[in-house]
Length: 239
Figure (cartoon, rainbow, N blue to C red):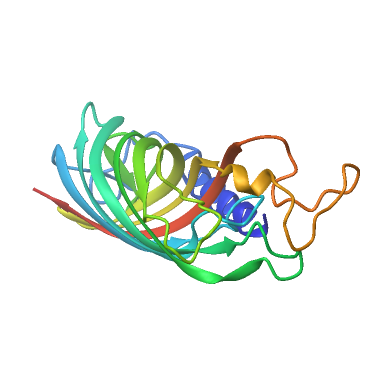
């Protein structure tokens, strides 16, 4: 939760860069204006970053790994941009043995790679210009992520599977030149986790009672949404 709050604070800070008072450029020469045009309708974006999170309520979701991705961004009317792309993340997850005792059922982490395709809509908060070299944005992405197959070591049968997700984000471009920019972005990946029925069964080694159950999943639900924060740095090139 602390990491999620830090990411949210970072995203809010980046957004506030855009709501600084926009001073009219009347009386300013182009050389002294803090605003400069961002040229070009197509940009190629490359990103690397870190996936955070805790794996959700039962700790079995993907978390704590590295992410890399690429996308093509089309700057429509310069206020709105559309992006198409994908990413790959090398994350880990817990293995929880539903038949083991409560104290020992959480096993060491295993790898849980993800691959995803995504469409996103960006709101460029300074429009077609940068402000002091910064071009902040907010965005919402919608995508499809596929997780690694369940290994034999997970006898409870949990699998991330293939999941739709949505990802609000905020960030800024730092214009290095007319055709090159650095990019910093904070994201929150919302996806659902579906738990196997074995999680709702009392463990063989330490069965509980109706009033004090020991099953992995005592919520009565088959799954639910969880948020996985991510921090990204990237390079954008106009083409």
